[in-house]
Length: 235
Image 1 (cartoon, rainbow, N blue to C red):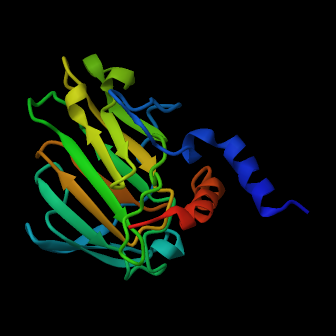
Image 2 (cartoon, rainbow, N blue to C red; image 1 turned 30 degrees about the vertical axis):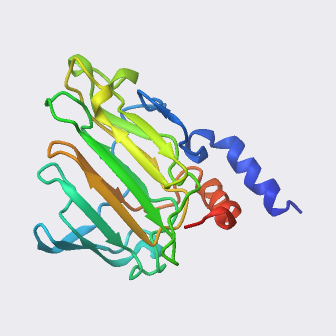
C-alpha cells in the first residue's frame, strides 16, 4: 500500500505548476501554460453591501461542500470601482474556514492607467496567527488581452514579492509598463485560511476569490502541502 508521502509526492510530480509555492520576488510573475483559460470556479453571490464598510458573500451548490455558506467582510468590495483595505472572515463557511484550493484572481494589475496598481495580502489561521509559510501557488491560469490585444505574455504579468517574516504577498502592477494589457492572473491557496486581509491601492485593478465545483488539478498536492506545513505557521 502506498503511504501518505508517496501519494503526496506523486501528486506533486504530476502537477508542479499548481502545487509549487509562490516565493521570492520578480518583475513579472511566471506565465502559466496554457494561457487563455477562462476564470475557474464560481464567484460568491455578494449581499448586504454597506459601502465602504462591509459586505457578505455566499456560496451554494454546485460548489464543493466546504465552501458553501456565507462569509463576512469589513471594508469595500475589492473590485475595479473601489480601493482600500478589506478583511474577510471565513469562519462561518461550512468548513469553518476558506479551504485550501480556492482560486485567487488578480485582474488588470498594471501601470497602463498611470496609477500604482498593487495588492498587499496577509492570511491568518484559526488562532488568528499570520500564516508565514508561502500560502499561494505559482500562477495556474491567465486570460485576457495582452499587448496589442494579443495573448498575455510574460511582460503583461505583474511583479510580486513574498516576505516570510510578515507573511505578506505584494502583487505589483508598476512593473508592467509601456502598454495597457487587460488580463487576469489566477493562483490557488495552499492552506486553509480563517481570515484574509487585502489592501488594494488603486481603483482600476480588481481582486476576487472563486470556489471550485470539482477538485482542481493538483488538489491532493495542495492539501498535502498544507498538512505538511501546518506546524511551521507562527504569529
